[in-house]
Length: 479
Ligand SMILES: Nc1nc2c(ncn2[C@@H]2O[C@H](COP(=O)(O)OP(=O)(O)O)[C@@H](O)[C@H]2O)c(=O)[nH]1
Ligand SMILES: [Mg+2]
Image 1: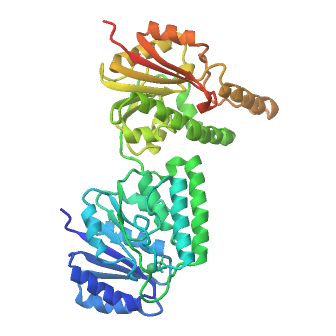
Image 2: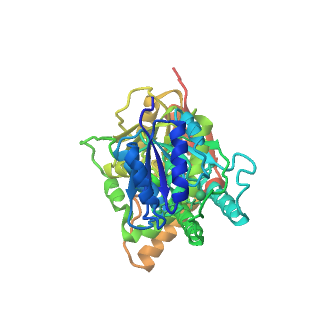
Image 3: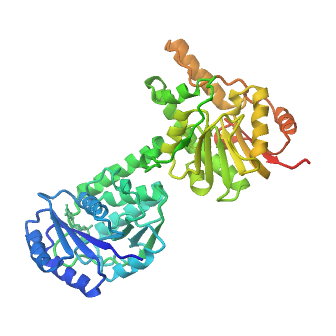
């Protein structure tokens, strides 16, 4: 049951509107508190609100010294809602472009959603009173946020409901916007963090009194921020995540790191490897991630329990952790720390040698592993597959990405090493040695037979630019 709600409204020169708006809100009798943040409006909206507040103990007014922007007002309003432990927060404009009667519908939907947004695109002609330029900007904003963020919502409107009792408050601290771009930036962060967002259809009449505070420079900044966010998402996808700082890593103290993996993960951001890291990361985002997704979805039903064996920093399985219960396992604590920062849902984080895992027999539905096998000798690969077989349920799948000696990335790496070490005379080693690059399909058929798996798919193709062989093994009970 919701018993503590706040309606937040920013104001700048809205004296003609606020009195009537408050009357209408009072009439609807939601029993919510109201918070106004006024930026020292020259028309004395702030003083007028103070007068009303004398008789209305549920009306709060914050005065800021000067016009600091609509986004910054929303951020302050949201922070105030968290500080005063409201369960839900509704935000709207003061100019009657958001009808107070819509609030009821926002509240109705808050039972099933974390965020409810008013959408001007769900109905035809919802912007009929607006001028051409404004309609154009609104539609352009919608088109771009849909196209670049794959976010199907009206992301630039201010009529929203937030379940502050369910949303991590850091979601509102990592954005950069002070102005109108706050709306799409904040919604994208919520979307990326997997909060459940739903829309209600609204009409948006033009404001009653006064004029819009939106300036041309707001549109230009929004466009700039949008492209910046697209790039940021490609190169640093985790920067929008509010991660599970508190999730504990189950560690094994007696591991011996023969191959130097902890050092490898500690050095991730060293300056020498900077360019390589970014090219590799971009490649993983664009090619490997959707490729991996396609295999996982093909062979494993959503929601099943998966093991990511040798998870590293987990740059490619963000979508998977959101749709499956994933146990991430790695040798290196540094890798597991990075993994935790890159994901918002993780079933468990375990430091283990994948040749000897602390997991129950037949407890896992599927395993995936990328760029791991090539670092082990054949005897160890057999030990790994034996462990996979032990922990997988009958009919469980192991999906393995294994770079072959004839793959393009191997040539690329050779050239890179040559350039760095011979031409630039830098002594660079990008990762521990690859002792077992895959050689042939025959090798895999033999390996799966020796380890008691049946090979159900072997793929080498253009979708990842011929860099990985993907092997899908099925555990069949041979008893
Ligand atoms: N506190 C504060 N409120 C603002 C600021 N800019 C706009 N607003 C308020 O935000 C709401 C929406 O602004 P408006 O000018 O109607 O934007 P539009 O509807 O997008 O044209 C109104 O209630 C404004 O008074 C600002 O810099 N500070
Ligand atoms: Mg308006």
